[in-house]
Length: 155
Image 1 (tube, rainbow, N blue to C red):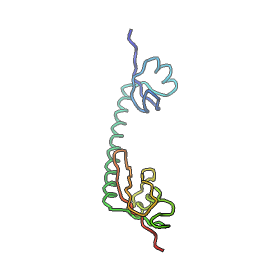
Image 2 (cartoon, rainbow, N blue to C red):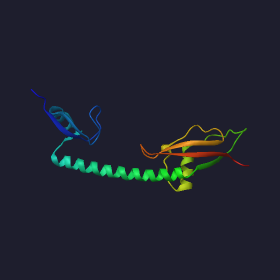
Image 3 (cartoon, rainbow, N blue to C red):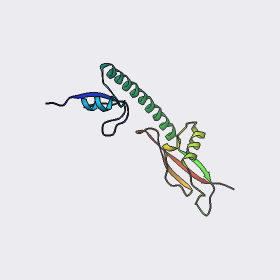
């Protein structure tokens, strides 16, 4: 006796089964008795499958456009040799406080008029005057590497 399976479209993320909008095959009883009544999935009909293909194509196109935009921003940011920030210094080369992602975001906005979220900026611990490499993750696979020069504030 073979197990009856049915294809369903998930409406939400379900652990060990799949993410929202994924097509998965489950046993007919599981779909009929649990997933569909709890509005966690719908049974995949030909109309729903067409709709899934359409949404996948639209999502792919949006991702492609976002990737092209991110590449342009990456080239623009990497075209600028380095960004500079001035900080108050104490004894020798040590600065008071540190340089934050928010400050970097504001410097980039002032220089290029591009908004970069502070969560996408990854920087090393900056406690002294000098030049540092900063990584900006624009998308999962698009990363811009820029240099930040920390200068002492002149009194």
